[in-house]
Structure formats: C-alpha cells, structure tokens
Image (cartoon, rainbow, N blue to C red; front, side, top):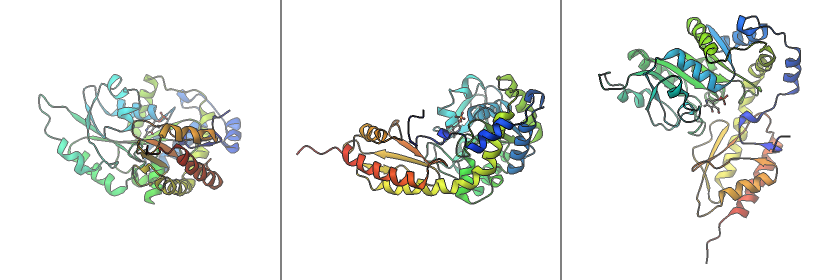
Length: 351
Ligand SMILES: Cc1ncc(COP(=O)(O)O)c(C=O)c1O
C-alpha cells in the first residue's frame, strides 16, 4: 500500500498505468546483452530520434546513466565542472570520485550553468592545477528549484566546450520538463552535447529506467561501460515496453504538471511563515520557512495525517512535486489542507 493517497514527495512516485502494465505483460523480449531484445531496441531508436542523436542506451536509473556517461567521457584524475548542488555532486553516492576518480570544479549558479559562469574557471592547465575535462549541466536543475534553461544557454556551453576541448554532458533527468517550459523540442536542448541522460521514471511516468543518448561511437563505448558496472540486462523489454509508452505519452502531459505546480506555488506563497525558494517554472516547488513563524515538521505531519505526502524538510528547504497522477481535484484538496495545516502549525508569539 502506498503511504499516501496524494503523493507530492516526488515524480518518482508514479505507478505504472494500466496501459503500461498491459504493454509490459505482452512485451516481445530477448537477451538485451546480445542486443536481441526488440522492445529495448525500439525504445533506444525512439529516444535517439527524439533527441536527434545517432544512438541511445537503456540503463536502469538516472544515476547509472550519469555514471556510465562520466566513465565514458573522462579519465581518472580529470575534473568535472559542475554546480556544487547538482545531483551528481550530492546525491549519487559520490561515484564521480570513487568510481570515475574525478574531482569537482564547483560553479555556484542559480540553476542555470552559463558559459560566462564557467569561463573564468578554465585557466591554463599547469603542473599544479586541476584538469577540467567535462562540463556537467543539469536541466532542469533539481535543487535550484526545477529551473529550466533553453537553447541559447546550451549554445554558449557548446561553444565554450569546443574552445577548451572539453566534453559536455547534460543530466537531463527532467529535460522534457525543461523543453516544455522553454517551448522547444527536446532535441534543441541536446544539440552539440556529447551525452544526455534522461529519466523515463520521473515525470514521464515509467516504473523503471533512463536513457543515455549520444553519437554511435560514444554509445557503443557507453554500452561496454554499462557492462563493466554490472548494468547489462537480459529480457529488459518488459521494462522498455513501459518506457516506450512513457516516451510517447509523457512529454505532452508535462504542461499540465507545470500548471498545477504553479497553482500550488501561488497558494504556498500566501501562507504565513512560508515562501518559495524560486519562482515555479516546472513541476518542482521548493519551499523555505521562517522558523519563528511556523513549526515546519508539524506542518508536514498534519498534511501527512490527511493522506498527502510532501517534504520532508531537508536543510532549509522542502519540496513538493507534481506529476501525472496528481489531478486538478487533488490540487484543490491539497491547497485546502496546506492552508489549514499552516494555521495549525503557526507559532504564536508569547505575549
Ligand atoms: C537531476 C537528477 N539527476 C539524476 C537523478 C538520479 O536518478 P535515479 O533516481 O533514477 O538514479 C535524479 C533523481 O532524483 C535527479 O533529480
């Protein structure tokens, strides 16, 4: 039994639709390590085509997609130019260091990694200096509030990477959300990159999997790297069948998730003691609070008692996320519950 009736903790909480379950049950399968699974091959072809790349690789997760990309693109001792609160820096068990042998060159951003922010960090490589090898972008940027950026920012990074002979990877766990917010085809956010990783199992709604897209040679190498880290699969068509539906139907639905997230954001902004960390642009809503005005743990608890999952508070923020299994009716119920709980969790000054 899922713990909440209405699940706003993450877009990873979606469960497979009836269509997906049927497609999974009927999927034609084969040994994917031998490239004999026709459903996986269809999924890889579809992903490559949508991103206008030569090839794609099905992997188990976003973390696996990022890791395989990094291992494919860098050498031990290289450095990764990245926002320090990127997912790869903070939330992938440190694989960049322990497995890829890389250090990070941090570029603090407000969610958009621009060429202007990166350029000053790319001095000449000397005996003593770090050796930047790859620019690592995240679009949308999770911990910066689901911020999206468009083709102009990408082109700046592509030019900079070329100038300095660097590789360029996008952690596009939610790149379809970015494309929706920017009103561009997702391929416009991938042009000129070496690799892009995107998740099927977040806003697109599949129960499993991510894809890495890139040119034929890199993806061939990435397939070998996936094998190296134990990510080779056998009859993975069962999972790819859900991925195909996620890729077909998911992107077109995201605009609704964003509209609902904005509605929630507007309500939260008006609640006493709460504020948005950044304007809601996609499906992520990051909330900060004034500890003297609201008992935030109590607020989350009261909301949870009504069967609605949000948060939990981490550091100075908590997160709510919309997805295709959150309806308009859910949103109106949630807005009432959030407001009632905020009143009940308010801290009244001693007087
Ligand atoms: C930006 C970003 N990249 C990568 C990942 C990793 O994806 P997974 O949980 O499938 O490993 C996440 C997961 O939340 C994410 O938000």
